[in-house]
Length: 76
Image 1 (cartoon, one colour):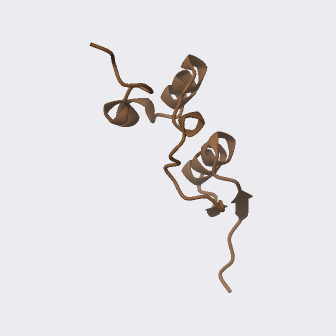
Image 2 (tube, helix red, strand yellow):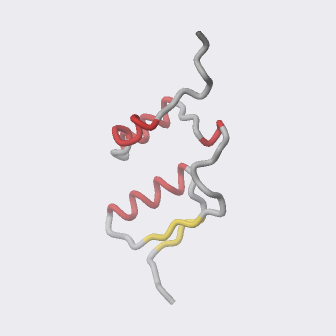
């Protein structure tokens, strides 16, 4: 059986950010979630401006911005 320092249950924003920060500090971490990602629902895709700021603080904002799409089709 493999041993790790920390197991995080739940890959939502809090779990993912915690796993990232722990790994950056040399902690051996495993993240478990029962869902598949990305989720095909708006609440799994929308980021409030405070969430965008949090991603920037984690160093992920620039990598994620090219993948962003508007939540609704634009009307002509």
